Image (cartoon, rainbow, N blue to C red):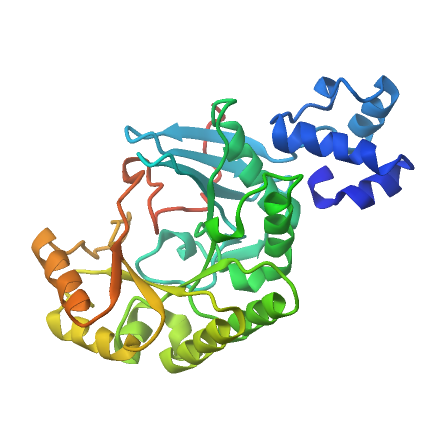
Length: 348
């Protein structure tokens, strides 16, 4: 897969000047071309060599392309080994065009409110497979548009595949990539303290300071352990200590994500606990009303309960945002993505 190689490696492989590799990058990133035959400023001989070695820019197979009535688009991609992931293009009325991407086939975190881990974990995605999702979603946009944001909130735990993820993100945020601002890239984690520290050290040592979102989802360890099994290994205090380290090393404000689940973590006393837990931290709380998933009895709280919970957080001095539901009618909203383990989708 050509996306596994940076431009220096490409130039070395084919024994060509670096500017030839730069030409290929312009076709892929700027002109949204995935067919080597269309890269007309390359010699025919060079194009044939690229085809012989790689076949095409993309190695995955697009099995399904769904479009919701809110213009959210979801792709189901099958890789060469037959494994699959989903990724999503989100649009809003502010002109944001956001790619939500996956980092693993399946997920080992097994959060009870998320479909992504229901069929278990299979493997990490390669850096090229992560990059391919971004480029495929970018191609869905009209020629005059390009992606404005990336959220690493799809299938998998990003911090358990950090090396491959950072390569892909560094490629798309480079000037000769999509030239995307690092402030418009968010990595979301269930809360892996060692991974958070590793990411902080990466930034401290000169790496790009991407935004960090931590999936908290509960105000205490008892509730969190009941909905996020990983909390039995790394509890809330360990996660908050790692978050403090990240902020100290990077100066970047952290987002704490909180999925509201009826009767589980949505009561007034839970809001008070959350205020006490996060008081004094430079952070944003992102409230996510539960997106229902098949095979789960968990429910979304009423609008009144959601408003009451949010108002209590604001009264306690926390900065709060509510995540708007997008793509739920095609199971593309937060927590609804699956790796489609049954492998019974008909190619469109």
